[in-house]
Image (tube, rainbow, N blue to C red; front, side):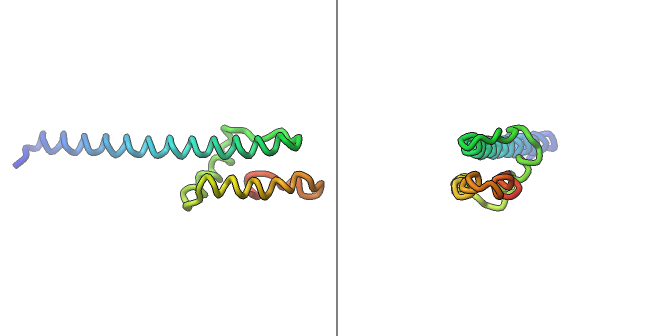
Length: 101
């Protein structure tokens, strides 16, 4: 049988482990968000657009939500590649932004 102190130590260790795993998952997700924004900006700059802020809260929130829904990095890249055609169209290029992609 475990004493109260031993149980408390086990619980604290488990809590710290969970926090560590959560932090690693968050860091991986943040790296994916950076990669999506970089890819989006790369394509935007090819067509003379200035690009999007990497640290913008709204763009990061939109991408984070889609990642949580199960979309992958490859899904983002495919959509960006398809929608890059908008940059050639004068009436559509203004819609090349994260919220409409």
